[in-house]
Length: 348
Image (cartoon, rainbow, N blue to C red; front, side, top):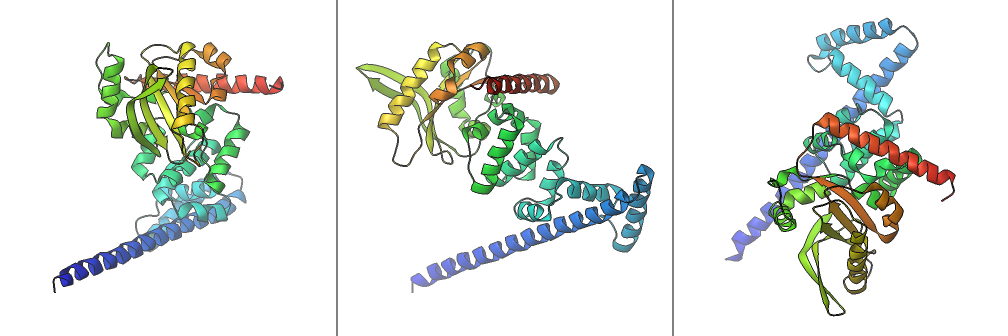
């Protein structure tokens, strides 16, 4: 007799799950159907406009169609909406690719992505939205924070960026260059001037959820001040994380000053220890991230840190004006692309 309420509760939970799944499937189907409709409308208008090269003719077509469609169907067919239809057709000329994308991303996602300034940024934000299940608000926040420009992959030649994004799309293969960023925005920590390494670490742990959001999806906190004993000497690693997609431990060392060459040896020691004593079967080699208040570009380049599995990134506890940050990131990307191109020409 006592089991009856429990059985009913279980039955209710199972039926509720079925209803929620059905509602989700209906919403997904409606979204995909609506997006494909907008694409078809855009393709039809595009083919009509392309038949007549005059720009004024295109404006007349959009204006006239909007008026007629609004009379027939009511709101939702403004001139601006028809221009969105044109844009989605231009952005995704291949209907099969559109089908694949709109099964996971809503029309609101695509409307945001399709107005980004180039194909690579559009591919990046599409792939990351799918991988990390971003809602539209998160997508806009990532774009506003210049995530692409801060991700290591943005410094690579365009053909390599496309290759890595293709691997992410087709094989769900996530590379470290798609995970690690520079700089990291730590303005949410609320630190006062002249803070110490301990207060920085304490603030990160206090705001661990926000810190992990800034690191990116897939990071799981493992330990702080991890004690490492080697030859009777005791060392302490500031923060240890695990990345589920990369399948590897991530050691994070916090520095208040500019990067110094000696930091490499310290991190290498941590990584080799973790590789020998902490890495589980099936996991990749641990990777290190040294967070500094400022990078030392030439030292970092000469040390060839990536060969040792070490990443260097700056952190910002106060954000500069967006225009200044955009300019700085643009300059860094251009310089790094030129450096990699010159290296390639030398056959290095």
